[in-house]
Image 1 (spheres, protein in one colour):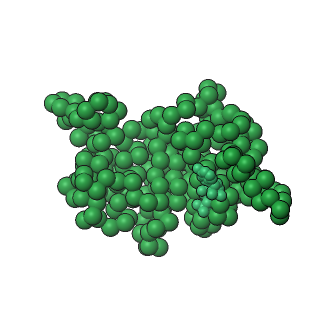
Image 2 (cartoon, helix red, strand yellow):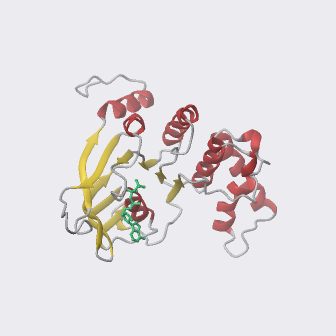
Image 3 (cartoon, protein in one colour):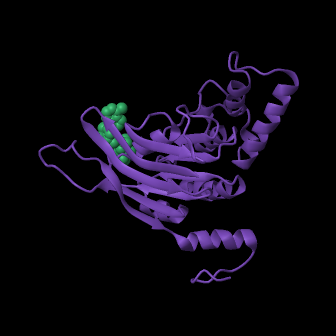
Length: 257
Ligand SMILES: Nc1ncnc2c1ncn2[C@@H]1O[C@H](COP(=O)(O)OP(=O)(O)OP(=O)(O)O)[C@@H](O)[C@H]1O
């Protein structure tokens, strides 16, 4: 579905990523790990369309990825991206209002009614049905991240990009969020690309784990070489478990059912 061919990200003289070639299948849950500064967020930004690769191509369904971030891609960052002056419902509605009324960001009559129903449905999916009128300052970190996820999903993206989405949350809340994101991934048929520093999270959630790091170093010019994908691990056990759950069958370790 998503294909990167010989993608490089360079800022001036500084090479951040080099020769990234990847095919990401529809429905995959790809975790990206690697040392700080390896270029994990830079990779997400080029997939999002926020930055352009300095070389190489990215295609979505075989067509060049549109330069701007369209409704096909949603994103959730570690820092809360919700608007403090809007309620939970207002924050969630905003995406639809911008999409449907780009000039005024206001919807009226039946269009607004339909948008509110859609927002309420999405907020129910992330467990915020009882919090529609709260403002972000009245909510915990976990609730704000649930809201950020609802905001990202309201436009029904096919690809959800997560940049350390649970990094600022307490361990107990993180576990709840892992359950939530796994359920949403399955329910909405999403393709997820998630950056994390937490190796357990990467392997626990992903169907595939990519490790970014530099293959070569020049001690006299650390900016000269960028990071590439040094490990690409398919987690067949998790994919089998997902397939079993969907089809109600059991697949043995040789892939037979
Ligand atoms: N707009 C920019 N201009 C110049 N350099 C940049 C820019 N954006 C990122 N970089 C550099 O690119 C490198 C990779 O940054 P990036 O944030 O992608 O790494 P990361 O692996 O996500 O790091 P972390 O795990 O610490 O979040 C860093 O050295 C950073 O300073």
